[in-house]
Length: 462
Ligand code: PFF
Image (cartoon, rainbow, N blue to C red):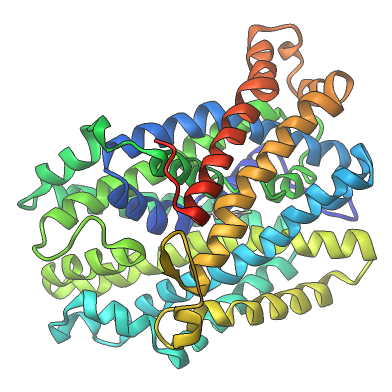
């Protein structure tokens, strides 16, 4: 254990795993998905997916990591043999590909921090919608921002699990929450706030269709950093005296709460500004917030810069966990030197991200890269569909099936008892096992089929 490093205590693991979970997924992705998928109805399904389906899988994933103290590939191979190792390998690959696009979006947040704080962006009377469009297609600026972000990520991961990851999260996450709450209070004073709240909080169940389910489930996996072995990797650093069950519940609650608050922040702001639509897509946060900061007058640039800076930190604790997965894989399996591995892997992932960066208007080839589901698909969307929307739920399906059906009693259950002896024979244990055995695989498996049909063939089952 000492050689691999470990979290200093249970709170260290919770902070790091929550840091991994809370990121762009909560503040950038969740609000625009709510906006595109019917508002409050999406929120309801999302909450159900997170607590009923994903939380049990999170227990299984963390337990596998702590039991084996290995990376996802090594862990599955050790417990289940070579074939199961493939599930771990799929997770490592997903981590690589997710980080390749995540780093680009983190670069956008970094760019907005610099432009608002130091570039006078808010004083130019811009149309922020148009500005975002030209911003993401400016390849040179984006190169600079995303290189900067990847270097920061690599430096922290090279610093080691305990020193690097834990420390940052504990300080910066509370600050982000305070900032979001402040913006919620401000938003609620604006005209249009009540329409925004109604859109976000009053469900219209006519809005629900196949899309809602698969987007909500995929988002829950992405937001909880679940299904690709990030939590196997972090779980591998957790001590035997710590309760996995309590930790997983706390991480889920923290993550969901911050996503919920982000929605509460965004929608009143969207409805208070004419010309901004709830279905603005991936640009939503970048379009809705600057106008609000501008309306704050002379403090606007300061507040805006701090907001995007904190968003960068939230993204950083997530990129760190994404990079940690392939790094743990390479160092465990091939016994490579950790620091060199960190820089090597980070460089490769950065290069893989270049087409994503070019796919937002800079290069026509990558912007109209392929065609499926009835529309042109850019490179970014393709990678996101395959390695996040589909791969994470699929990974989660296998994790649940593996823990409940193959590893089972002596393995999975016993691992949950460590640090939590009262679990043995309790009703909580029965519920957990029932969910991991039946409900999670069944629901995830069904929604996976719905997703493939919808994404690639544009077939709506309902
Ligand atoms: N959970 C992160 C977010 O919501 O921003 C994204 C993420 C991090 C996904 C780590 C997967 C992962 F392993």
